[in-house]
Image (cartoon, rainbow, N blue to C red):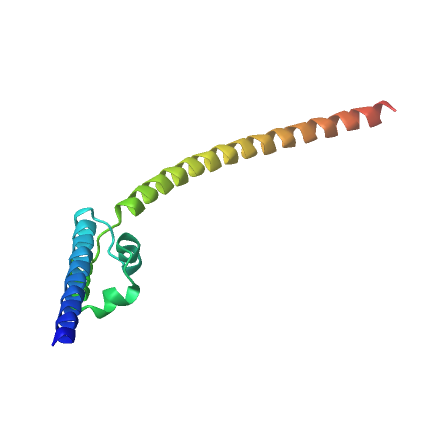
Length: 130
């Protein structure tokens, strides 16, 4: 009878630990939703320290993850949006630089053509004077 009591206590402790893990995982999912972070199992693993298998095998947690991911379909990650805006600004700046360099290149080609013509005329004058 005494062994059964220890066994029952062990089961009760395991159940409590399991419930605490589920609660922690659900809280992490809820926090990520509130912060508008993209829900991913690797990110949940990093935040909670729980194994990948825990998130896939526990039906309560898995359902919460699936529901959260469904809500986030089409959601743009705020970090990505900021990066996209920065890249758009960078692209615009580079396009302006390209336009400026094209204009400079055209101007230099025109000047080069004029100088080559002048040089050709000078060479003709030198040859005529011989």
